Length: 261
Length: 261
Image (cartoon, rainbow over all chains, first blue to last red; front, side, top):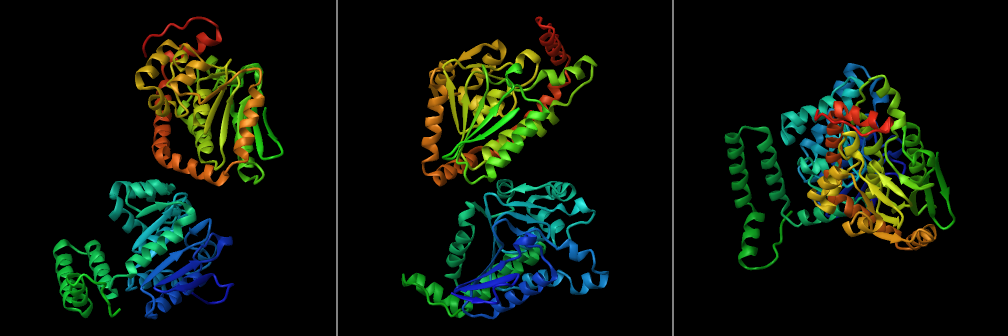
């Protein structure tokens, strides 16, 4: 295990190959996503994507919060050009283009941009006392990084509307019932469980993971016919890849596969 | 008043001390209970909480005297909002406090007082304790989670019968029905309760907290919804003429004449 970055940093990256763990570490502000945090998260994701020892990324927060979203004290002083050109969107674009699986390990408050950050990940593990929500409406703004789009795609329009119009908190169990999180675990084990799941996933071929992740995302973003074509293309690539050949051969020969990536 | 007494060795007493009204609860006393519960939650030295009453009652639930002035002026009260702001919050606080809470039912438990006792982790009663459902007399539905817990504990037929008869259950009957876990003789009730509390305080506290979380996982999600539904039902019941007649008959110490609406 190696620590990268100074201890005082608002974002810590710890590498436990095949896992890369990004910790938002600004507990005094409940891990609000200041522009500094955003820049460090982008750097951390660049680093983990380029590191061939890392196959799965985990994003987590600290004890009381995953993140309470944008730093509104900072945001209120930015002008429109700054928000548009230098703002949070770059982070969401970065996550969208991140090729490896990302798991969000959520303890405590996961609100506004924090919830949107978690939803931009591929899998969400929540502690039993995690609290989700899009409270932007309470300060006369609205979710700006996917909340109004990703929540209705998961829970349907009516409930999505309720969450966004009322800004009410969503308990971990409610989030689980509505399919907003993958699993609820005791808070002592949130990160540990995310790591276990990450290590299981990391046993697969990275190429296959990337192709599969892309295909699932296209199920969300395109009409069925386009998504099916996309899936078929990725399937063919996987089937004729070195890893695909190796995986099938290992299965037939009843041995562990040895993947290239 | 609500007394919070912290004993050495990790046992805290939360005593409802309003014997002149059989420890009925009004807005002021709820505020005091919430404050005391916040203190015991924060205080690392407190391991176990004993909730009990002073005098011949444990708690008889709502203080009709507080509501009397509204009724005498013919004003309607939204009982749903009273539940949301007071009783529902209290029972959820008891459930989510990660410390064992013992209900030491020293005497009469009536109405919401029974609901509050049932939500504790352990229900210990004096052999002189009495249980009176009481809601039927004033045309309200059982609240504080009673409509959720009672059918599960004693079966829905017996709930209905108890509601209609409004008969007094002895401690022994309450124990037989599963409303009470332990019965001690009245003479050494306080001593035995304290012994039990110290036994718990010296036990594997983390494991107790984990057990409580497991029990909560089993029904907290449903309980939250059941409490909200009870609040709606009580709002409806609280606007009926029969409720008004029930309260006036109680205040005027006469038999109510219900009309069915």
